[in-house]
View 1 (cartoon, rainbow, N blue to C red):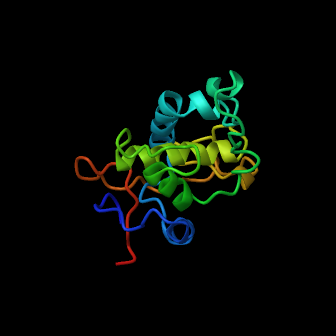
View 2 (cartoon, helix red, strand yellow):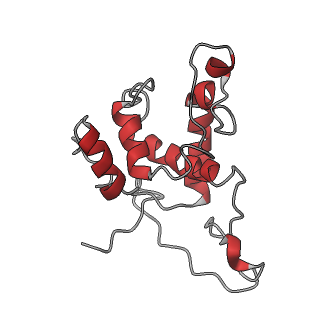
Length: 165
């Protein structure tokens, strides 16, 4: 799907569920995309969701909006497709962010939200900017890493390589 228009899922509960199963990020999970997502999150999401994604942003703390869910609790297992659908169409009290965030920015912020879902600690990255597996037991740094991917065309940096088609 990459960055295609129009968005193929309707603003319905059925398509919200379908997006949760079918829709996957076109971005590679890497340092550049996670850090770009952190910048978007800081600018656009902390007011409600809070710095650590616990639902304790300023609008929650001052009583304007109650019950904002936490990424480490109620939203811990929320699939990326449902996140993207929510950013695109809105859900409940959260309005659509499609006019404020590009498709790429929506996927980038989801890359960072996945870090928050795991407790908020940024992963370690290898010299290619790829996350070092947490269960590597320290051996991953001692092993040679895979060579870096060839340079992507301008505007496509950080995109996942789609070999399925």
